[in-house]
Length: 314
Image (cartoon, rainbow, N blue to C red; front, top):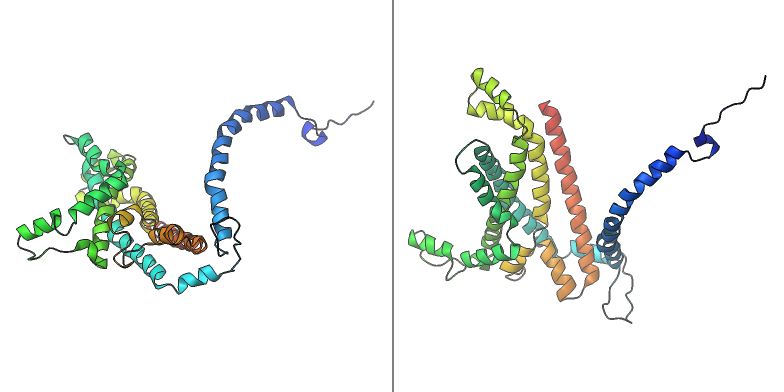
C-alpha cells in the first residue's frame, strides 16, 4: 500500500483558485486608490523631498546658475535670526490667545445646543458659518473692524467714553496679535462646537437620568457623566487647534503683512517672505522644516499629556 503526502498549494508554489479570486477582487480597490496615491506623491511627497534637498543649498532660481551646497548653514542661520525667533514666539502668542477661547466657547455652545430648544438647527448653522467662510473675506472684514480711523471697535470704545483717541490696533505688535487672535478664535469656535456636538451625541441620556435620580446637579452630571465621555474628543480638538495655531498664515498676511517692521511675522509669513520676496528658497525651506519639526514635537508632548490624563482618570 502506497502512501502519498498531500502538500498544501501555498507550500508547493501553486496558486489556488481562491487565491486568484482574492487577487482579482483586490484590483478594483487598488484602481480606486492608485490615482489618489499618485496625486499625493506628485503634489505633497515630491515637493517635500525637493524642499528638503533645497534646504541644504544656496538655491539659485535662474537656470544655468549653480546652487552650491551649504550643509546646515541655513538651519543654523535660523537660530541666529531675531525675526525668525520672534515669528515662532508670535505664533505661540497667537496659539495661547486663540485656542483656549475656541475650546471653552465651543464646549459651552455645544452643551447648550445639545439640548432640545427652539431654533437649535438654526443656531448650529449660524455658529458654523464662519468656519466655511473664506479666510480672505473674514480677514478683510476684521481689517475694517480694527481700522484706526473708521473701525467699528474704535467707534464703540469712543462712544462708551473708554478711549479719547483712536487706537492703532494693527500698528503695534501686541494689539495686532490680539486682533489677529480674536479673528482666529471667532472663526474656529464653530468647528470646535461641531466636533464636541458629535461626541455629545454618544453620551446616553439614560446616564444623565440615572445621575439626576441619584441627586446629581447640573455641574455634577457634567463633571462625572459628560466630561469622561468627551475627554478624548477634547484632547483631539486641542491637538488639532494647536497645530492650526502654529500654521496661521492668511489672517496675518492680509491684516498686517507681518508688519510693522516684521513685528507680527509668524513662521509661515516669514517663510513666504524669504522664499518669494527675497527668493532665498534655501533658507525658506530650512525654516519650513524647522516649523514642521517644532509642530511634531509639540504634538507628541500634547499626546503624551493627554494619555497621562486619560490613564489617571481611569
